[in-house]
Image 1 (cartoon, rainbow, N blue to C red):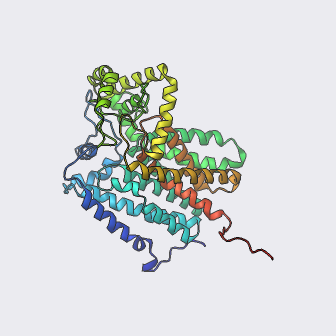
Image 2 (image 1 turned 90 degrees about the vertical axis):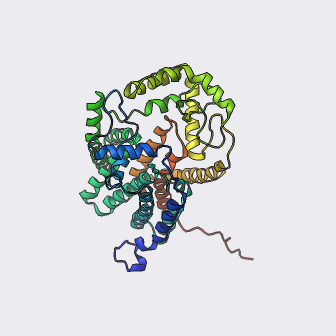
Image 3 (image 1 turned 30 degrees about the vertical axis):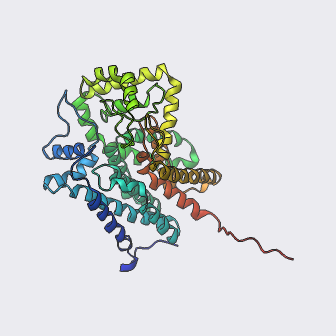
Length: 431
């Protein structure tokens, strides 16, 4: 059914999905911690820095632990000195808008009822609920992902340059929010350039090159700033070294998940700390961590990277194992180093398994029907695939997958829409 924009009030998607906005606001108000915790002070602090005309302190105290995308969004709250509850209330708005935009994107390419069904599935994606009351990037990142799917779909349907430019800008801002996407953009750009030599897909690849080139241009001001600050080209942040260090751990019973520098197994899953685990962490890492943490900023990041490279060279097979442990944690929230089992893993195993098997089935169908796969699916799945595979090289968690689930749901919905009608009834037999 062709999409049209003539809605009455009851058909308007902003109205139809408004109960979710109410529910999201309720969850924020009910579950917001009374004080800032975890990464929250960092994002609020960066927003405050931007208001005062800088982002990171100067050397040697350089702090580029996070990209500026999310702090930019928080700037109005900081500038107006709003109560802290207003910061996570933005999450309620972003999640609600992501549901509306996801429905709109799907309605251009699949049947209306199917679009509504998958929009509701995304609205009820419970893994993201834990981030609603938190001043974290996950909800905003998922909003950007949905916006990218929507803008690419609009470009595919309407063939207007404005949507191509918008797609590139949104992907660029995504990289400023989650810096791993900076590397994803570069790899996607190279892949599309290489594929553009194939005559049959040249036009679509060139359009993708434009999108990723615009995305890269969007990040130039930030990369120019980091180069001025650090003297390094294409420098995204100084958090990657520590993550790579823990991912490359060569020790048994350590599975690539991140640990705090004071070497206490006090996070993920938080209530199930193992005293024996703390002792093993101290024995395995105390000397090296103590030396590295005596340095600051970029120098500390470089030392972590050098230590990680030594780990990889000394135990390459363990590095490969840790990579697959990271993939498993993104899908199933398991395994974690030195921790007991937790019941939350069960729901993540169910969710991850459903996504995994649905993706495998869709992959088989997509390969068989590869010439009929629409452009938005191809381009967003390229973005997803490169991001997912690249995430395995850092300390990865289920939340790394959660933010890009809309791309998988978009792909699955488009695949289902093209399948012939199926029935559970047996054929009638002639007696």
